[in-house]
Length: 69
Image (cartoon, rainbow, N blue to C red):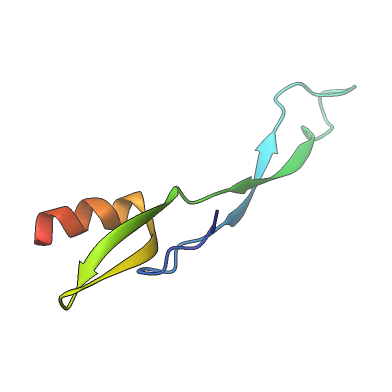
């Protein structure tokens, strides 16, 4: 499934996990590993201008869309 919203452009962002167990002496930094934050993107059929189209849309935009229409 697509990982980018066609309405707002929200997509996958980068972040880090921090393990709070120090490996060795206390002066050393806790190890960090990379991770991804993926947008909750759904495939929905929406009516835009009288036409029904299929969109990849995030749940935040879906919720806003239901309030507007």
